[in-house]
Image (cartoon, rainbow, N blue to C red; front, top):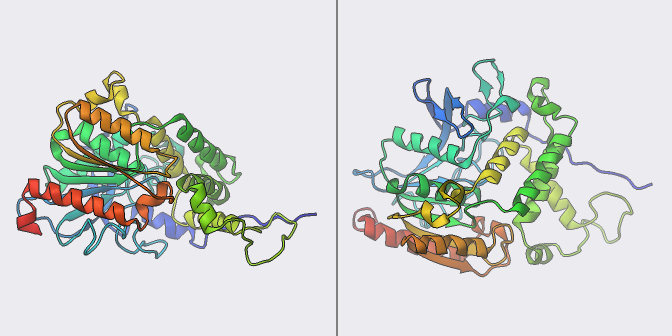
Length: 400
């Protein structure tokens, strides 16, 4: 009979992970009862907090601030060592000295989204009304809710207008929501590998992941924290399924093909015979070290609900009517999660609204995750766009 090897438990303890939920290793903005966050579901969230990181310095006239919006499984630790995993920041390819987003020139901000699990209030946080973890009692949140919370943070930092808002995937959705909701507060926008609404296929993939989490016997209808456990197997499977969508067939074939993992012949079991199987199991087990299962449910649902045109009679161009923001939209040829056709639809809508927009489709076989990887053409485009916007903003001569 074939043997079975399951996904191992995470190396990081639940206590280590939970500490970052309410007491993060980053800056925190607290908002009390006098400053509720009004959610799309009709609930006022109060009190709440936003965890964030900053890099660089704000210039004298507060005109060089860039907000980075993170993707589904990201957080505020863009360009510093992650406090849970000890790994480098998730976007050090783009952010850092000599990089397109250079802290020597810009004041860079990244906040953990509302609903997340790295210090901003979410389902893993303590509900002040009960003294227990929120779990599924936490209200369902949306991309607009995330952006409203970020706007409150930007107000707290004393910044009126952001020089740029930058993000990919779910972060790109936030970028677009910023421009639609606060057009006068965004001078330029770099929207990468994203769309103005989630497709039926993407909703289906998210439902697959959510069902994997909820099928884990340790999930306990979202109440696992009260039992001191975590549905790590279900969350790992959800991550494995999602990670496949971030890659391309060509990238998987180039990286793994059908090569065996540390053996020449099959074991005739259900162990990880192939390198690609071992890779996916690693992705799953490492992910659960730093992420909360309920937060995964909430954030995927927020992406599913996103549809900018829905608030404008189904006409996307109306969402950007009269906007003065400068846009750069970037897609990747092998990204089948957010294909170029969706970026083109956005560009056409921006053109119809007479917005300033540039568009680049980058040739690569690295799939949706290309925006996180070392893709020189992407770096060159980002740098050129920000430099051009900086000249228009009057930053180049003063701030480099």
